Length: 471
Image (cartoon, rainbow, N blue to C red):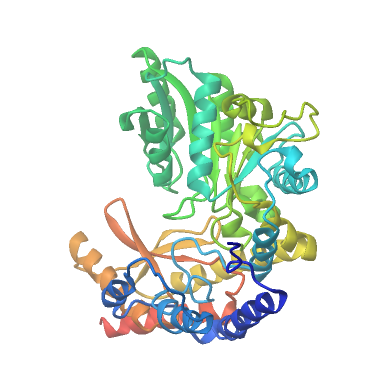
């Protein structure tokens, strides 16, 4: 018996999209008025969501109401202008449309032959990223789900390029501020956690070059095999950018692979200030860039670029009889030969569509606006009595804390946790804290394309008002 229940008619497809848009448009338009975060009754709600495998269907409208009225509101409002926590993205609507198209046509781009034009479209996106990073034409890359997978792929590529098959004496070097995904990636790549040498950072939270030199020299003397430095182009804690030129010099002299984790900060290379802060990134062997951060795309869009495209291919190219022949033409790429993935989504369209619709200039202007807003916030905090700037902005993050005469370290930490809780309870902005050098500090990260002057003004107003409430 022929089964057609899953095949929708043209009218049914239009109805689904129309009903969804009837809720999506008001939702997006109301973002400025929504709470920056709302976790009320979160545990009870999460428990209520658990359910067995459904045997019968539910009306689409009921499901939409459930999502928009009950599930979506209880969360961090990561798409809203008041989300100044962690590393915001934004969620360009253009990409949602691109995903609808890509998922509907369901083309496979893991091998070039399966969709030549679409494979080239994705290759174009990666070529554009290489241009932004200052990489040569022989560079290659891949789109990933995010920076964590990109960092993992970079470490595996560096391991294959710089170490023998017996690699457990290999050592990696990163600052004590590096993203935790680097340690996780090294462990998944087969290294003991202790092989990741955490080098102390300097007064600006950048890797201390002299301490790095000491660590590498000590390891060589002890029979270890230093092979990789992981630099940060915008740490999550404070937005610190390591001395990339200094690290590139050491990588060259010591024959080490230099990887730059620019997941947060790399796309600031589009701006003059970003290029100045990250000078030397073009000398690295690989770089992680997350379009779902500083290109404002929805979550699930990361990328890795590798200067020596052949090293990326050698690391991941494995033949199977059931696969089509790979392209020998250097102008084309089979993404399955330079990626851990074979089956994968067509990610290129979600980047290509907004960039083609607008060109790169509006993205550049938005990033400059975020740098301006962060400088303004830092200036306002600097002149606020009782505030100490712990980390001045190097990109679009500023870290600060409230100080009070006579308070010891633990009491100051409690005070700042209370301040953060009070600010967030107002729900106009959502901030996060972190601990650096045993100090609990509050972070403001300005990155959403929906965040403008009026919202950061509210952030400063709420910080000052809550400080007054705390005495």
